Length: 281
Image (cartoon, rainbow, N blue to C red; front, side, top):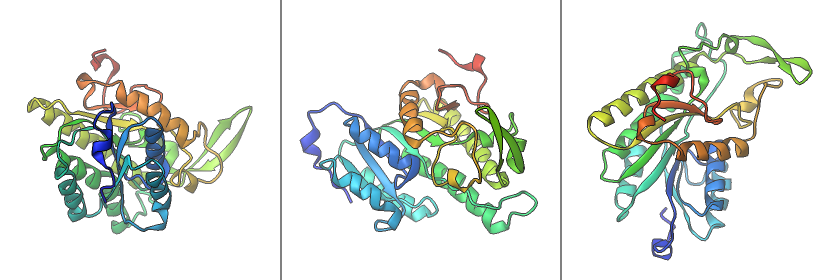
């Protein structure tokens, strides 16, 4: 799957980004924008010839080989291990930024109704798979600058979003419309678990004097496949292009003193992982 003639770029100044879950939505938009910036991209899909991977194949084929394609299914430990093994074979590879974007939101997932399998599916996709992917990457000898987990303010324990458990009246422009948020319990729980795990990961790395930066990012209410499952209109919806453009700037602005913290696409401190006074600017 490695398509890059690396020697062609050996004299160029670029950053290397790994985007885990790049076949559509936010992940695909990261690939588009990073290609436009002249960066080197390692992009993953769950299956090489799945219909949803078509757009990424198009991006990879249009940039003269700067985007590498790999298979990584975060629901499979074996798939994660194979992906990491392939990366470890690349000579002199350094990854400046890893964006772990894999995630899912399926309905209904009310706490009073969600099935064992559906709850487990959310946890495996949104929490366990992303954390194990980061863990396996960190266990290699590949130097990694920053690992970013796509999280959500839905996972905040400090700022509980009760309106996500039912129908809520939102003010839009000069009027208002109802939108059915249709129960986010399993999704929110999986993101809360992710937030806690990545915070522990950051603390453990600091104790080992490992300078890899661990961040959680809230991308905003983005109009993607996940966003489209909501009925009606949601206040503050932005495009994937707007979200990713802003997130790239936020990600690149953070240093080791920010490791273990939660940020929004607007570069605001998130509600869950850190207090403003804890940040060393």
